[in-house]
Length: 279
Image (cartoon, rainbow, N blue to C red; front, side, top):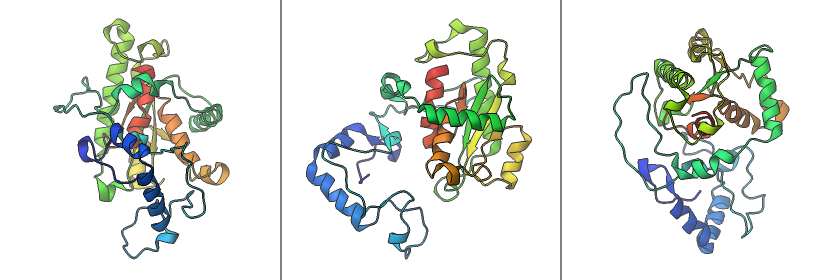
């Protein structure tokens, strides 16, 4: 996307600004020319002298593909759209407490909860879960996204202990809702289907991550009994295509009856489906 005025937290884009871009033909045409000239989008790099023509993100060909027509606006960054900010300050939370995301907005309530993955994506996600749990997929899942690679330079690494606390907070909320179904209200309550006879303490944890398998960090996570997809070992990209690791990660995150994540992550928004269906 071209540079648009930032919304709250300095990164989100107010929908009204996107609408202005879509309505301005001259602005759109100038952006298309900039994309071609600068070979956008570029992979993340720390080298100013990088040859931009060979550093294009995989799957893109800015000078070899036709731009969208006047009747088509293609977005892959809707996760950054926001409504007017509603600043709130939250204290540190105990295991039994939680707070809503200020980025959920009415769009998820009225539209996002009705979006579904294609049957093909769901079917392959089923296959991966069967492999992950050796043919015996548990009834209850909690999902976690752990992003590491680019956070080393752009944000920070979240301690594993914080993810553990987040999972326990989710377990607490799930169990409270199992014990007293009338104690809570939310947009996904009518879709909440907690497996009968399964305590939240017995829910298994599935996580997605860009951390390479075999690293000390991944070994620590494995000690917790958490399961993840090894896209490298399963050759997801080679057998299915370059977009499939991301698509399957998103589909698996949405399988959780609860999810936890870093607040700044895009995958946190992708996992909102879990909150609207189960929370």
